[in-house]
Length: 508
Image: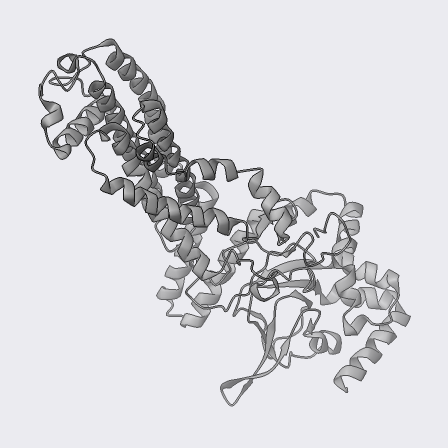
């Protein structure tokens, strides 16, 4: 459906290619609890020539964004982000007493993120409006330079090392090191992905996110409040100096735990006993922190209410459906293959519904739906062998009545000996032609993009000869037999051409 902005068909190196990676149908890399690739579905009418975004067809030196090795790299960076988020406020508050070693570790961490900045210039991205993978290096560079490049660079500059190199000890210069917290956006994206992963409990992931936000807020507030006391001219008139006169001489662990204690008692509004503000600076920070806690408390309560009372809407319904299907399979002792097909179908339907493609078509007038169907499906239907030589009007009638469906890997589209009900046309993907002989399965052939499924059974009105089973995520156009026969009867000459095409190809 989506085309390049400069031509009617995508070209390699222009607006990229369809976002539709290869998938082997096995549990493992890219498996998110279903046998469905963990990225975008092809748009309606996408053909093989339009979705060439596979690792083997990318430009040289580009990095496939769904490559398992790149996913491992992203996961490794997440671990470094967690380290940066913890150590950054700690260094900022206790940097007078920290040895040089943590700063050396920071430089190593910064080096990894510097590598990622360079790597980003070689990673294609998905255009959210056109559902295309952009593999043009110039467009990749322009997009990155105009969005997050400056922030990523600023968060990677080793300010601590520069500070030691030039022997500058100003607080303002060291404050620039806090820019490393920009990397936390990666953690937010990680939680967003995990919430949709059915291998993990949604409530656990959501609660983990809420707890992480709370702990990070407690950690930062405690470090900032210690920094205020440490920089105050009279240490005795500080919240920590009032109870620990020689707090600067105490160990780092004791001072850090004391900061966390103050931060948690303030956040939970349990009141103050031994620790409280002693000067105007600490009072102002305490006011700001308590106002922030009002927002944070509302955020936590709202999310927990959503989890406990309102569940999670559509995602929760999807997970309940998955659980119900699993229970049904266990209760009836269904084979593992059938259970996998059930779960794959539910997962794929959930993903397809998320794109709201069919809902968008349903709300449009019939004439507009017909125009869209012609634009999307006319080329692929016209290229099918069965409809070679038929009139343009026949193709238009046929396309208007066709419905697009998605099938997950290893899902049966048509069963052997099943009586005909629909004619299927494979738009994208691949299908095995399977025959059951003497109780065993045998693959007799394959059907690729543009192939027809079950045409002999539909047109000859007899049981299907083979089972058609997908080997990868596939998009199929379907038209019911009654509608097809009505169109053929209305166009007698075209019907004769179809009969001849069927006889010529299948020798019947």
